[in-house]
View 1 (cartoon, one colour):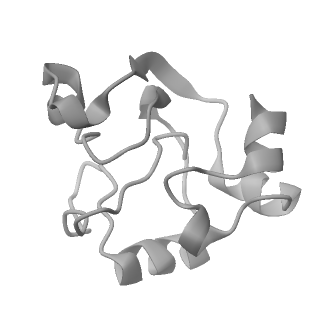
View 2 (tube, rainbow, N blue to C red; view 1 turned 60 degrees about the vertical axis):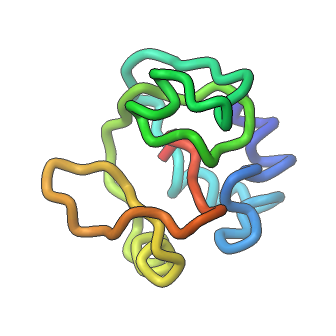
Length: 106
């Protein structure tokens, strides 16, 4: 839930976005406009879905199939610095570094 995300932060990106406890940052980085949900129990097991959606380095959890919205510039800069790929129509980000990934709740 939104409250859980605000309270606990993002298991995949807390180390660099530091969303935990910051409701203003959580509002900027999440969107209620999404399509479908994927539940990953063992993302590192290289299931078809985790490979197809590039989720093999994520922690187990639920993820949106697609999200509409814009990320703030400060987030885009951090993601580029971390080498993290965000799926878009025009791929302007590199693929994630080993061990880095983000939830698709953005």
